[in-house]
Amino acid sequence: MLAMQRPVQVGLIGSQFISSIHAESLQHCAQARLAAVASPTPGNAAALAARFGIPRVFTDHRQLLAQPAIQPVVVGVPNHLHCQVVLDAAAAGKHVVIEKPLCLNLAEADRMIAACRDHRVKLMYAEELCFAPKYVRLKQLLDSGALGRPTLLKQSEKHDGPHAAHFWDVTRSGGGVTMDMGCHAIEFFRWMLGRPPIKSVYAQMNTFVHGAKTRGDDHAILMVEFANGVIGLAEESWTKLGGMDDRAEVHGTGGVAYADLLHGNAIETYSAPGYDYAVEKAGSTKGWSFTIYEEAWNYGFHQEMAHFVDCVQNDRPPLVTGEDARVVLEVIFAAYESARTGRKVELPFASTAARPIDLWKPAP
Ligand SMILES: NC(=O)c1ccc[n+]([C@@H]2O[C@H](COP(=O)([O-])OP(=O)(O)OC[C@H]3O[C@@H](n4cnc5c(N)ncnc54)[C@H](O)[C@@H]3O)[C@@H](O)[C@H]2O)c1
Image (tube, rainbow, N blue to C red; front, side, top):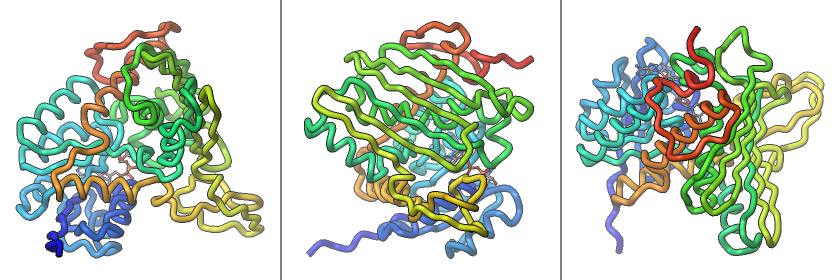
């Protein structure tokens, strides 16, 4: 008979949008226990703790990191804090799950990767699209040969703009929609294709709607050229009305597959009064709408957290690592460079810029 393993004690750093999804996902994981949550605004962490029965609450993440029982921490704080929090976690000997994008620049990325390596902790990158059941099935179709050899991949995420001020402030976010959602597409392409090298990136960006709110791009097209000739075409938008869109296509020499992550699973709803739309980012739910259910599961968050907990419990290598996240960030830098120059940018691409956005629209 197998011996029962002790559940993994997990700490959450951050307590709002994405951390509530992490908490929900970890609550569904039999091998995980939510041990503590830390975030600085008084009351926020306590509210999350009350909702999910988390026993310990801190206002400083370093107090959480000082708890000996905690093994991994899951970090869901604004992008400009990712590097310092990961360095602190590594120094405290904690494994880390870091939200996307990895951090603001390539020097930070190198420091984070080196710190986790030196302290012998895992740096696990939370790209949930690699765990989303519909996209996992899409990859199985491709890997099985059902679509022949891949020629073109597409992935798009679109909604009408993020929910919190730090996304709009490029000094904290590092960029606009390419930084926020382009990162998903880039890792999706790499994962889907078995992570071949990337040859070049071409990008076109605009700020169509939200110029009064942000210096960042609110609309972007990226063409990622792999060394094997396959093209990944990413479409990202913060200007799309009517709720969240997340879609992928795989075109191959033997077939094609279209996967609509959210609408494909949704309940076609007509509601005269409208209803509570939670995280769908729909501007309105009156009239016709697409009611999404079990969003965190459909998006792969439950599976992602269960995988990272398993990596810690059984010392397995994560499916998505800090090194993968660094490649994603390098592509993002190359994309902003391409958007400025109007040219295709070859990889490897080195940049000492503090943020990707500075390559496209430097601070005035
Ligand atoms: N994977 C995804 O699809 C996805 C979705 C949304 C956000 N994110 C990422 O998650 C991160 C957080 O975004 P969000 O939407 O949850 O933002 P949010 O504004 O809803 O929450 C941010 C949290 O960070 C906390 N925080 C701020 N400073 C802190 C500090 N010094 N120490 C500890 N906590 C601190 C805040 O108190 C808050 O709880 C961002 O990096 C974002 O890109 C990922």
